[in-house]
Length: 181
Ligand code: FES
Image (cartoon, rainbow, N blue to C red):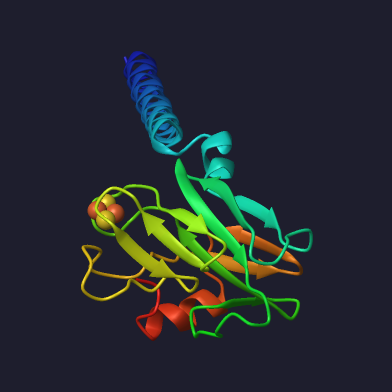
């Protein structure tokens, strides 16, 4: 009788142990599955590496000629890069790279978004859409449709290169001074 009771008790304990093990295994599986699902979800909302790389544009400035506008592209927008000559007025919006002064801006008119042309003779940007004008520092001429200067994109200076899309100390200084727009 006692032996039978012990046997039954032992079987009940074994069953409980098996159930505990199954419960733990299932719990662990659920945790692993949950982490996996979160990781997969995060990967789906993270930008692809190629998209991250596309957010930056690196421009070499040492080969640029004075008073010659170069139009680059950054995030689908035209970017004006104009190396200033010594006779062009210095401005707090100038980007100084390796001793040279540059005007850098998003090449979209601040009136209605047309792309102004650079007139090297009079050193001005002219927007043919409604007659807007900006000087070589991108400042809008008063009394004409554009309400504000050409916008300066976030940039970082890296040696003789300009990295667009990253806000370096020179850009932050301009931003704090309200000079970027
Ligand atoms: Fe340039 Fe209107 S869009 S002046």
